[in-house]
Image (cartoon, rainbow, N blue to C red; front, top):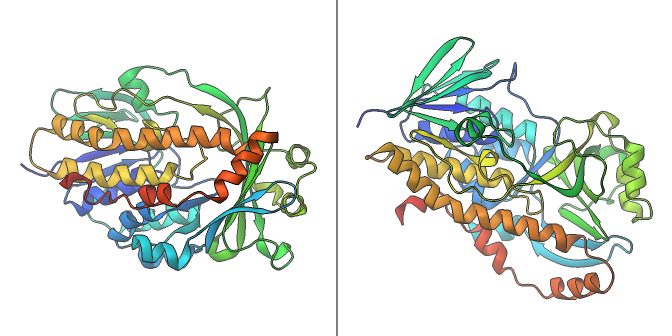
Amino acid sequence: MGERRVLFVGGGIGGLTAALCCARQGLPASVFEQAPEFGEVGAGIQLSPNCTRVLHDLGLASELSAVGFLPQGVEMRDWKSGRVLSFNPLGDAALEQFGFPYYHVHRADLLQVLVKAARENPRIALHTDARVERIAPRTSGAAVEIGGVTHEGDLLVGADGIHSVVRTALFGAEAPTFTGNVAWRGLVPADRLPPGLVRPMATAWWGPNKHFVHYYVRRGELVNCVCVVEKQGWEVESWTERGDQAELKADFAGWHDTIQQLIDHMDPDACYKWALFDRPPMARWSEGCVTLLGDACHPTLPFMAQGAAMAIEDAAVLARCVSQAGDLPESLARYESLRRSRTARVQAGSRRNARIFHLAGFKAWLRNRAVGRASGGAMRKLYGYDALKATEV
């Protein structure tokens, strides 16, 4: 078997990580990004050990350490009193238990780490301003047409997110369901806040019909906030839609003073909101020598902080399946079989958390009693997954 050339549509976290994983397996890769340059809208991201295992294997440990923040744990708090409902240690505990750290990073910082690594890799070609005009799946190989030029490869991977043109070309338009939740994202310069207001961990405040999450990014220079509210009348699914701080403030009126201070000190130029839509697991991700990765095939609601992690796991498993000898469609079928149930479980878990986080009254009281006694078994199963060895089973 000669070298299989892989074409990636989408130059985000999933596409770039997958290109690096393919290159590590000896496979040449081309990445096509429709934007004029590689970039991310300002927002934080949580990288748990199940995906940092992959990023460290790519040789990016020192780069992640330089831009990230190592949280000491994850805690749940009551929306009004601030009482800690549960706590799970991270930091050294995560490193000791799983062998790899848990990072909080700014998405733009992570993307630049990946772009730099890809540019330095002779097996990877990066293309910007590359909007796909046509997908041409074939019996053997695949091709994309961009700017009137056809690019051919042995395999085409759609890593182009929730509005994937590759998925639409393969399986037609979809009809996602609005969840009734609208999410806000914002960044707060840490030096604007009173010392000690934000603890060095991921904190989720649970309240009736809404919740608020915050954690440090960029070495602790910024606090990333994700705030989810059940509301109707606005259903724009876009990461780049600007939000009005006054509306955000009104959504969390009456919440704990910490929440008020975070909203008050938020950078007005880094406040966004987007409507959350749900999509059921797909029956299949591939057609011939074309497949999907990350949000293009299993978009996940942001209630487990695992969307990017699933794409990074996909990247490692896909690269290993494709690098092994054999029929390429069979390799893609194996990739799907190894990934479909795990990603579907994460989708289901995120959907379930959306309900649990927003309980009110007696149901919330029962939840709070139960969560305080919860074991770390689910966390061990989630974070202990080894995408580097998944193909060995």
